[in-house]
Length: 298
Image (cartoon, rainbow, N blue to C red; front, side, top):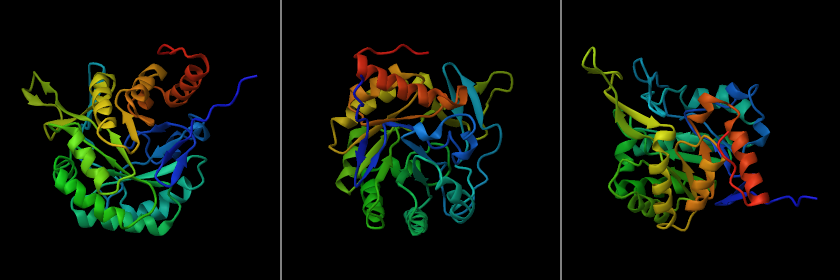
C-alpha cells in the first residue's frame, strides 16, 4: 500500500493542493483548457493578466518561434477588470483548483485599483503581481527593475488584501535577489521567478525585427537553465516561498526547480505543445517522491 504524500504548498494564509500551476498568459482564463485536461489535478491557475482598462495588445505578429522556445510580444491583451469580474470570474470560481489573478498596470494607482476591485469579488485564492512583463510600453518592467519601486508597490498592495500576495519578477536585472528581498521586506507572501527574457529575432530578408516592437519575451526550454539559476539565487536571498518557472516540459525539469529551493512551479509554454504536460509533471513529481527516481522527459 502506497502512503499518500503531502504535496500541499502553504503561501501566506492559504494552501495550494499541490505545487504544479499553469502560468499567466499561457492558459487564458482557464475555461479554454477545460476539455483538454483535468483541471482538478492542478495546484493553481494563474490567470491571464488583468488591467484596469481593456487592452487590445500589441500589433501582429505577436509570437515567433525560436530554437527551443518562442518569442512573444502580446502586450497584456485582456478584457479589463470590470469585464473580468462580470464575464470571466464566475466561470473561474467554479473550477476545482486555486485561481490566482495576475494583476498588471502602468502606474501604482492602476495596480491598486485593479487589486481593490478584484478583492471586492471575494472568490479569488490570491494575487500574482506582474511587475516584469518586458513587452509593454509603460509600467511593468520599470517597476520590476527598481527595488525601491517594488518595495513601495508591494507595501501599497499589501494593505489592500490579506490573501496571498505573490510578486512576479523579471530576470532582466543585474541582481534579482535585491528585487526579491525588497518584495519580501514590504510584505509579499511569495516570489514568482522568472518571467521571460528579453530577446529579438530579425528577418534577414526585410532586415527588420519580426516583432513590431522589436524585442519580445523569450520563453520555453531555451531559458530553463537561466530560470533554475535565478530560482536558486532567490531561494537563498529570501525566506518566503519561491515559485519557479521557465521552460518546464517534464517532471525532471520541474524537479530541478524544486531542488533549487522552489516550493512550487508553473508550466507555461509547455501547454502550447501539449495541454497535458502540467498533469504529467505532477504525476512525475509524485513518482519521484515515491521512488526517489527522477523520471525522464516524456
